[in-house]
Image 1 (cartoon, helix red, strand yellow):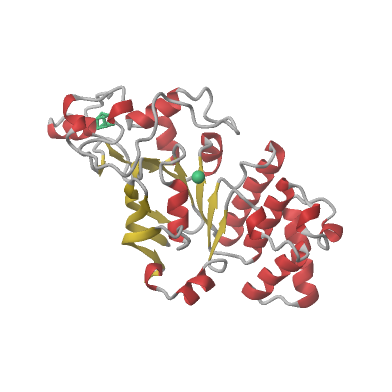
Image 2: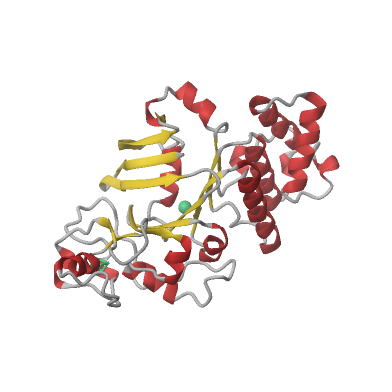
Length: 334
Ligand code: SF4
Ligand code: MG
């Protein structure tokens, strides 16, 4: 289990202190996919960087725990964290160019990952590297294994990076928009590969995306982020069938077909508020079609719902008011 508890991330910016992540909580189990969704700037990528302890220089973990099988990774020395990173926890992200060594053949880079993290050596490791290239959809892997990164297209580099990360056989994978740069066929192939690895080896996947089609095809759990906080978390089927937060409803209503792959998050009017300001009420209030008078002055908390399955929580005063009025569980549609 990988468990994030009450994570707060702060960044120092010209405008002041930015509270980029404000009280994040989630649990990723082996063999499960937990999808983190939301518009850009809501804190998804910052969450991934915090988990790997790869925050930018102006950023820090202000509070919180990150537990891997009971051990707090935020307490580890940088040297021990390096072993975890790329070993038990892998990460793939959007810009592949930066993580490949330009003067090393791609196959050697994959072999290096295999030899560092699995018992395979020499010819067996090389054969395994060929297998990984094949599994990520690189044509003629026996030949391509001896090429340098500059000979490859952006999409191929992305797949090499995915192969290199998976070759270390991580227990958990943090994938930030892993397939956004790939064409639809390759994207489907990579997502199928990740599902296979969940079945074969119980890979736990934290999938960060703005593509709800990918989420509906992959995720067991979904958390929707807004302005540095989770505003709704639910089992995936429940999230798509009965979203509760006004933001979730707007996003899903504007989406013509949630099953369709490659569909970006719908644009809804307004923008994510800057996070250097103090909030006195609900962060979504300026964009909310259900806002009430006290939404601007009362910050909602993330809480469970009486009439939804366990694990479905929402941060919205509409539901707090229903609970207070004893109306939750009456089937009243909000
Ligand atoms: Fe909308 Fe109020 Fe709920 Fe915020 S708390 S999402 S403004 S109804
Ligand atoms: Mg991002």
